[in-house]
Image (cartoon, rainbow, N blue to C red; front, side, top):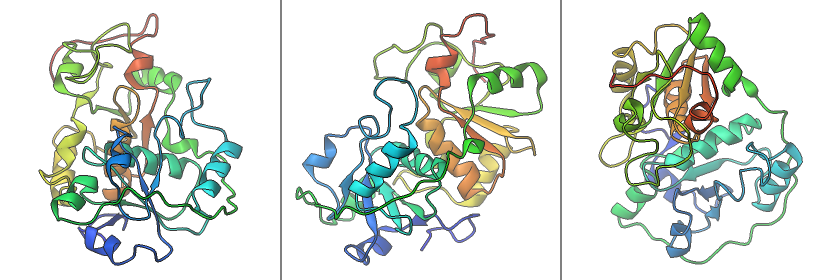
Length: 284
């Protein structure tokens, strides 16, 4: 099922594996950075999961509440026992965020399509513009698992006390303070540029190959070990709004089996706008 048998968890599926199981009780969800791609064509039977409209509280900056999450899952035809395969554009950028999100509410069987949308297309596999009509089902979410999520006070305490590894997964330009947002995006979202003191710079996409599939476990282990991130201490990953860092959380926690990894989804848009917190500039 997985593309690399030495990963800590069997949470990746190949395009071949998925193609053989379409319409066989597996719910496939497309989660794109550019949600319009779904309308241009998606895997047959795949439901649309919008990272903002579906997964973000419309008023507070937070996840949707448990009852709304249960309604969302039921509307998409996802029950507690359903195998959910998420995939998307840009190396599964937001698909990994959706994976982390489903784990927050305790969904047991979630997988990521290794290589995502682009690999499916590159292999000449079929897309459709037909939207499925899932049958409404019942879903009961667990209370939020906040053990895989970091909040600003926890991050602030980490800077003062030490004993934890911070990994900044944004671009080198964001880390150094040259940019506030990723290259090519509007430069907005935080009042200050730079990075959290002591954070190591390991851009999220270094974890994938040119075809969008995840690198082998040995390569991934060396990537994070070489920067001192996997040194036995708890790990906090952050980016700009928490989605790129969810990808790194997936690599560290699910593929490499690091037990204590948190995604700081407030990330730089929160930290870079706080009053009186330390900020560093410059390259790693």
